[in-house]
Image (cartoon, rainbow, N blue to C red):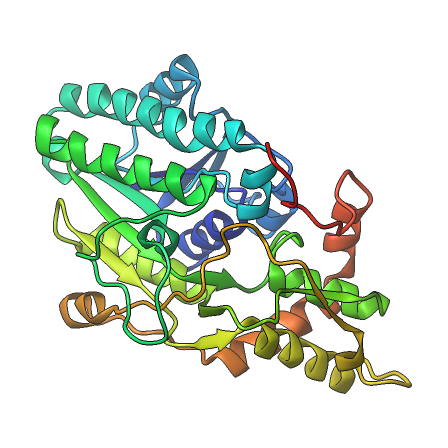
Length: 350
């Protein structure tokens, strides 16, 4: 099977690509704009393979997308290209609307034209897999979990843009018959994660023994999903998910943010000890605007229909993540030599 993966040089996308190219016989074309968060070094281990290809194309570029589809002739499209950092969406929502809404619309339009022109049996086998987030559902209280049927209630420019793209994908299925599947995932973590996100940010600041900024009192709760577990689930849904259906993907690992930061501190103290425990570096800072209190995912549908469940506990996954950053310093040092210097984002109006 030939798979086109948008955003394949990003964090989750590169994990999917690496799995496909090392664990299956499939061919993959990465279609990526190569923005600040995309790192081709994340694909270095597979970029030499004849089953790998790269097209530097913005999903909002209709001509570029059409050309890639026509030349590559994929059997499936997995759509992961997105602006994804909530803090950046607060500072600059325009880029999120352009990529996540306009880009998804453009990709859907071009995929619909491509799919309609396919001959059988390839037309019947084609799939469009849209990858989304639990943040479209809003914020939970102290109990309960998001289900696939939970009403949408996005609270940030990022989650609003992803909610819009989810609705577009469903509309293209119901209105035009485009064969789609959708997934909504909880917070990912693991190797190759751009260091603006909580866990890699805390790892790198902890290594530097810089203050560790924790929003509010650190009581916001997230369900953490190891990225390789997520990639396995995405492959499974693409290959076996029911058309028109959405599937929640969670890690069954709810933790308060402060617990996560303390876990990072303790692992760094064990693996790269110093004079003082790193928990003392924690500093509580002004909370993020519109910060959702809690996310939790019910993934009984995915587990029951397709037999998936996470293989990593939060403790095992976090240890693997910290160890990876300690043993791959050049990867993140190259990032920090550019425009991003671990600074705080998302404090002001757009």
